[in-house]
Image (cartoon, rainbow, N blue to C red):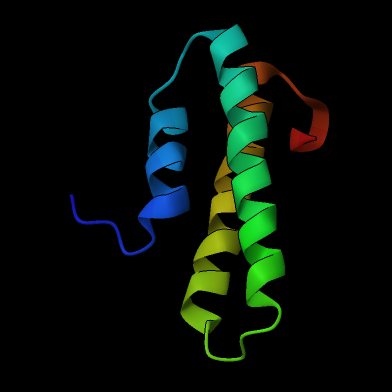
Length: 76
């Protein structure tokens, strides 16, 4: 699969495919950090609307994974 933003999408894909609870928790932290750092970098770039939307969608996916697979209340 050809990823448009592989720097953070590839680790997100890896997270989605992870089912070991301990490994998943570590991967969640890693991917969240990548996403938040990228959002910070893009805050200075007014031309990155598509990637910002994709990053926000990714955070929603992580929230669901945390709620459904890790049992975190409200995905936090």
